[in-house]
Image 1 (cartoon, rainbow, N blue to C red):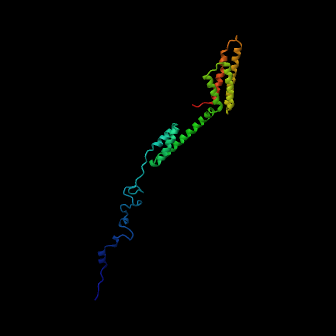
Image 2 (cartoon, rainbow, N blue to C red):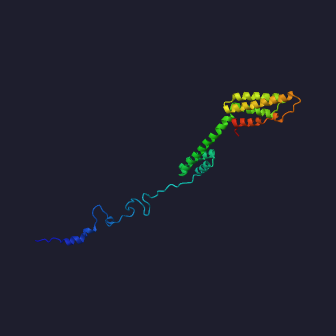
Image 3 (cartoon, rainbow, N blue to C red):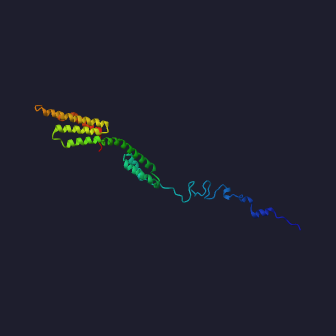
Length: 230
């Protein structure tokens, strides 16, 4: 018996054309130039409309204002160095939580330290002068003379001159020592002039001898050489 072979046309109509199926390892949408939703090119896992690298639920950190850093910067500019230094340190510590103010805090601290250095450079010499042993003793001698004038002006002037020479010997500052010794010479001269006037009853006292101009000028020179604080 002769058997007939089934036509290929019949098998093609039963299974469909092979061109309707994608090649192994590809998808039908990819073969047509399209990407599945959620798997667009260059954004694996990116949500539609999201920026590259963003993932679902991801939140960007929010920066908060660091008031201590701002206050430190203002204080440092306005020469409020003790306050600016403290605020800058607090602002620097808080910058980790607020996410801002670190640079401003460092600037405020730097300005405060600079003001401290300038203040120290100005005040230190004056403090050194005022704390000189000879200057302290000389100012005490003059203050006592002004508060308690001597009953005997001649003996009083000579005593002040001797005390000032003793004070000058204690000084560690050559300029102050010279100024104090010069003032001591003025008081010695004042005592000598008063003694001459008293020895000659007929002589008319010279008002200039009671308060010679050099005495005031040399007293101011002592103040300048010794300095003062406060």
